[in-house]
Amino acid sequence: MRADWSLVVEKVLSHSNDADLAVLFQLLMTEEERSAISGRLKVFQTLLDGQLSQRQIAAEYQVSIATITRCSNYLKNMTDEQRQKVKMLILS
Image (cartoon, rainbow, N blue to C red; front, side):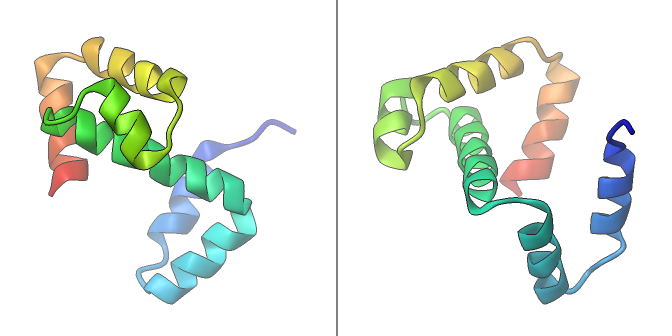
C-alpha cells in the first residue's frame, strides 16, 4: 500500500480544535519528527526574514547546516510568486 499524503491533509483540515490536532499529530508523528518539522518551519521563517546568517540560524535554533542549506536551496528554486505565497503562509 502506498502512502496517500492527501489523506493526511484531509484529516488535518477536518479538525479545527487545537487539542484534537495535538492528539492527531502525536498519533501520526514521533517527538523527533514533530521537532524536525517545527525546526524546519523556524528555518524557513528565519531565512525569509533575512536577518540571520545560516550559521547564526544553526546556533540559535540548534538545526543542522544541512537542513538550513536544503531549505535555502528550496527557496532559491522558487519563483517570486511561490516565494510570496510561502511568506504569506508562514510569516503571518
